[in-house]
Image (cartoon, rainbow, N blue to C red; front, side, top):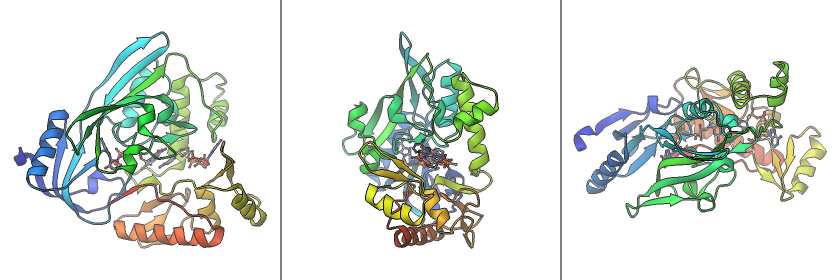
Length: 339
Ligand code: FAD
Ligand code: NAP
């Protein structure tokens, strides 16, 4: 088994920032048996394990003194169908966007707003991936994970996952749960979510007033391709900071000085501020320090122009955090997982 481990492997192709650090050991898991064998071998050799999917939410700041276990399991299936409601399941290593497209080809809706998010199905519950007003918790039907402490399999329902805004139990207990497969309850009848960002506008520009799920997906893909840098061309991990949720009082203080502040009131009385707006106001948009920079169109996205290290990107992120705190009194939380 250990023969399948490679040594001193560059992780550059395995993280979308394109950071060139090395894994002490590297292997891939194509099924549950591979996962169990890798974990058992690692335990026997007292080697730590870092599980990765598409590497699109990682900031690697040093060589990884561990076995990097790349989830490469594949498989997606319809589990049950009752009236309009169809439960589907996909293995952790399935590429997320291909899975979304497959669900649309089955005539199912529910995932269309989550089109073109990079990464894998297995990582999606980690931060309850979300975009354009939909999060996976909205269509979640369960997942199976391996408890790395006990070696037992466990099925999780919605409540147990404790999903929050870009957050979950799995993110809060790092390294404990290895997600093997995820289930979603999708619909044969579309319930469109169009009131977020420019989705409705894009559809009406195309003359579409009653969109299908596929049309919504296509519109979102086209918006995302225009706004976001393609990691294959410019290294990045999507939004680098979460949108901060702050008190109404702090929002009013900021609004007094910056009347155009972008703010979304939440059900609990707090207010979500657009982190990208704060960073842009502070003058960071397009800023570059060596090969680490803030994207010229999307100030929420940090980019690697080529040879930036994880430490340089992290230092830039810390400077931005400190500046936003000083200017606006707002703490920005980093979104990618730092190693
Ligand atoms: P990785 O980066 O490989 O891993 C992320 C974390 O999950 C790590 O801590 C890893 O250890 C853990 N992990 C991975 N797989 C498993 C598993 N099977 N079991 C247990 N732990 C695991 N995110 C959004 O929410 N919405 C967006 O709209 C969005 N847009 C993006 C756009 C771009 C251009 C990019 C680069 C990123 C974007 N992201 C977005 C962030 C990212 O794509 C998602 O968070 C995605 O789910 C990460 O998946 P991954 O497979 O790449 O995870
Ligand atoms: P945008 O449309 O420019 O909007 C800026 C921010 O305002 C978004 O981050 C979004 O918050 C919030 N927002 C917009 N309309 C809203 C509404 N009607 N109600 C409440 N909040 C609203 O955003 P964008 O940067 O182009 O991204 C579009 C979507 O894709 C967003 O949902 C964003 O989260 C998602 N995305 C995520 C990542 C990532 O890496 N996490 C990367 C790219 C895009 P939310 O972020 O809370 O949705």
